[in-house]
Length: 136
Image 1 (spheres, rainbow, N blue to C red):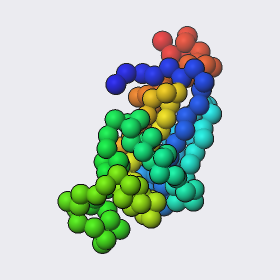
Image 2 (image 1 turned 180 degrees about the vertical axis):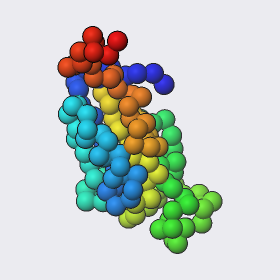
Image 3 (image 1 turned 135 degrees about the vertical axis):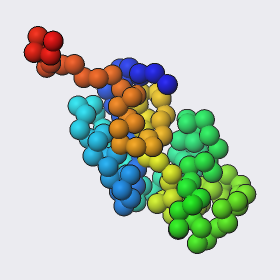
Image 4 (image 1 turned 90 degrees about the vertical axis):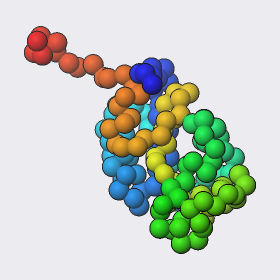
């Protein structure tokens, strides 16, 4: 995947603030000068339609948004459970902490952030304020 130019300068981030990856990613995304709309799924309920839209935007089935190795999931379901789409939505609504990775929408592009620095690959580096003569 290449660099995405964000005309509207906005990033929408879906993350869970009670896991370390979510916390780290949120802090990293906040450090940009882009406008951020951060949705902490531990505090904000996501509708079934939104979950389905996120999965489709990423080009995956909704079950791929779920960490089936997460203790909260494995306590209630078998790792090889085959559920209907609406049931996967119920899992995410009931246990949002099982979201595999934070999801960012940058412009029109949906991205799963597997690490805090992943998101840098998807935005243009900010060159404003850099004195090129000092960096030669």
